[in-house]
Structure formats: C-alpha cells, structure tokens
Length: 163
Image 1 (cartoon, one colour):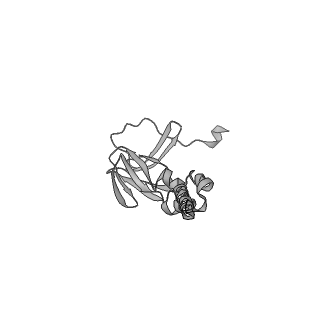
Image 2 (cartoon, rainbow, N blue to C red; image 1 turned 30 degrees about the vertical axis):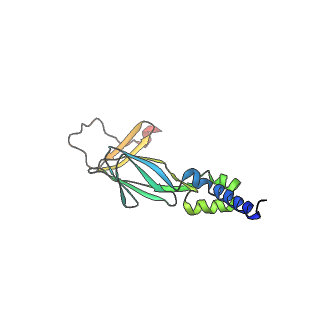
Image 3 (cartoon, one colour; image 1 turned 90 degrees about the horizontal axis):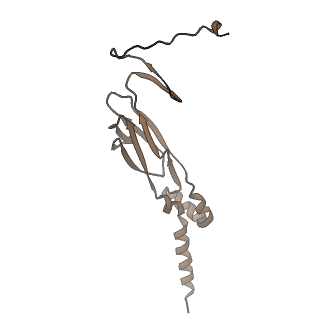
C-alpha cells in the first residue's frame, strides 16, 4: 500500500520540473556574438572588458546591457542589448502556471536579449555622419585626407529650375 505523501511528493516534483520551462529551455544567460569591421576592437559590456572582436559574450538575461567597441583611430561604437519576453513564457502559462512564471522571472529565463548578434561598422575619426540607403553611401567628412582624390562635389539645387 502506497503512502499518501508519495503522491504529494510526486506531484510537487512534477510541478517543479515543469515550472521553469523558459529557464530550462533558455538558461539564465545568453551568448551574444560581437564583431566589428575592422576587427580587433576592444569590447566592454556594462563597463567590464570582454575581449577583442570577434568575440562571444555570455550575458545574463535578467537585465539590459550597454555595449561599447573601441579601436584606435575610429569612432567608438555603442549600443544597448535589451531584454524582451521570450516565447517560452507560453510554455509556463500552459504547464507551469504562476510558479513557472515566478521562477523564470527571478532566474532571468523569462527573457531573451536582442539583438542576438552585434556587427559594428567602425567609422574613421572625423566622419560626422554615415548614411546608408540601399547601396548608396553618403559620408560627410569634417577633415578630408589630403591623399584622397576629389571626384565630384555637391551643389545646391536651384528651386526655380525644378518647377
């Protein structure tokens, strides 16, 4: 004859096993690939060094992260990794209930970091702006390099001529 407490313990163990669905599937950290063009930029995340590009950083899913890439002679690149609710949360709603949601929220498994890959195009110091539209690149240069060859110049368009 089975004891009544065996059923209670079995039920409790089953609830705990299913409770943290997102934590089990996502874990509490996420690997974020970071690269730069040119390579070799120093990467810091939340002020802590993480190596030189290309690098993979394993970061906590619980909070947002500030990423900075720096390379001598180039403007620093800065971005923020933001946490968003993971799709695995629906597994908790279906199977783990409030206990599962609580476990995943506390552990960080409830979240995913976006973007999951960072590719930085480092700009040479002195560029004020760099715009991209399809395949047209426009660069505004504050201090031109004397070795550059001038191939054209923009001119102000006369508004009366276009009408």
